[in-house]
Length: 345
Ligand code: PHE
Image (cartoon, rainbow, N blue to C red; front, side, top):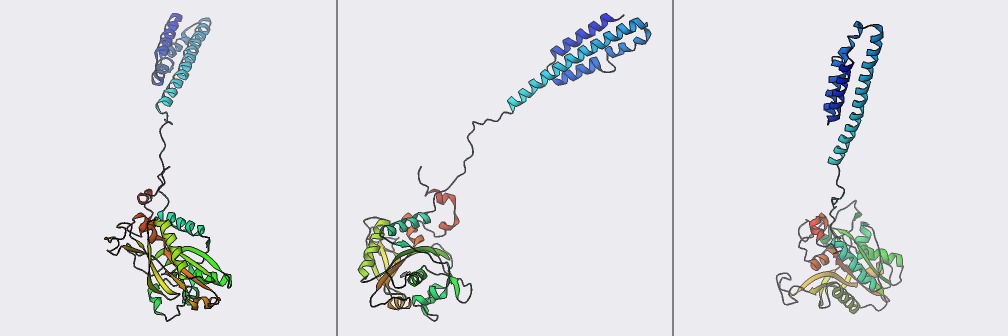
């Protein structure tokens, strides 16, 4: 009998299993000891030559050896699988301590910074904030502001027309008429910030869309001194205490007299330089005393009431305030531009 042979095979197999270090080696070991053509299995063919008694003993011994090798293999397989898994987990570990990728944000658009500052300045002087539609009727945008259909001043304010009588407002002044309509002869003190539109060829200082802040004060005994004092206070709060303003005669159909308001140039302090084109002054807004026709057309007694109005270009103020050289920068939302206005945390 070959019982010794079995022992030998078993020992050799267990030794090989013990020394195996990966699943490939174990697969080879399984083939070597348990495959059909292995030494162990070939011993099976001897069984037929043995007596019944011996066949039983030897058969059982072969089975036992095979089971023993097989369960050892199985255990080692599990052991190695776990080792290999741990190794893989170790190698493929994600380092969660790496800093995340930041989403870069710009700052608040200087347009809004300046708009909100202007609003705050006027709220501080007791003004209410009014609103009006951007798509406006010819009636409010022109007619009620003393600009009839054939008036030459319409040429300066061409716009986008929705229909014959509906258009994109060319200024925030229609809110003057709308507010007078609402207040029905009572005193008014409002500002109205909002978008305005004109049929313009865009360049560094012109845009088909821009924004204004309208101001309107109507009460008894309002005179041009009130207008000047108001705008002076605004200029100093917006541009600094040292700034002076000057009023120049101008023309708007809805104010009489009309003025163009300049501030002293920040760059040269009024001496004259390239920025102010050697005048020492920079124009910032238009205004005037509300025309008696406008008061009358909008339900106010022009003998009893008077008022002043003004229109400030928001982008213009922001450009002067921050030295921005191109109006289009407000609308292109380039984060490199906006980043400069980011508040330091
Ligand atoms: N609406 C005028 C413009 O856009 C500005 C203005 C407003 C002038 C109020 C006088 C009074 O040019």
